[in-house]
Amino acid sequence: RGFITDVKSQLMGFDFRNGPLRRKYDGVKYAERKCEDLLYELSLSQENGDTMPGRQDGSTLDEKEWLQLQEAYSEYDQRRELVIKGCRDAQKAAKQAIFALHRGDTQRSAKLITSANECVQRVWQEHVRDTPGLRYGSFAGVLEELAEAEMF
Image (cartoon, rainbow, N blue to C red; front, side, top):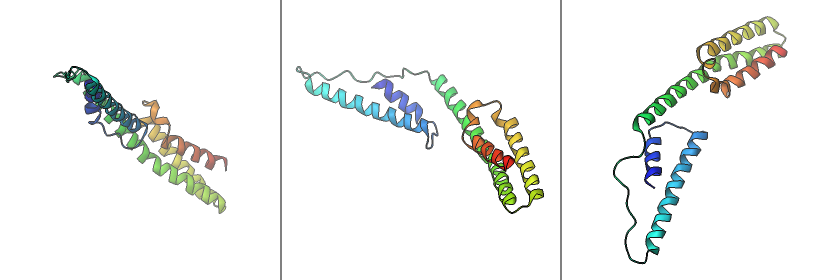
């Protein structure tokens, strides 16, 4: 129980928002609750009335390592936010290019596609190239939209 409580207390320092890591964090909370229930039931079943050994003072976790993890996650999250913001302009330009093609305005469409390509290149160079996990989500969505505009 002490280990799970220590892990949970360390994870509370992270800003998970809604996502797969948030669901894993919720799983840790449920595991802690199961341990508490089990320990309570064991304490009730003891015949001699002795209590279960309590939590020992001190954490079994390496605080320095958890700080490094938290910093790495925070840096990744900041990069992710920059990718999302950077992809918005490219996504908008690609969509507008498709709409311009629907109206037969090929010159405006070509300018918008060029603009979208420049935005995508900038996001790639500044953020995504060095962090492979950022290739999914917003970046993949803008590439799909841009490909559709180019093919149209």
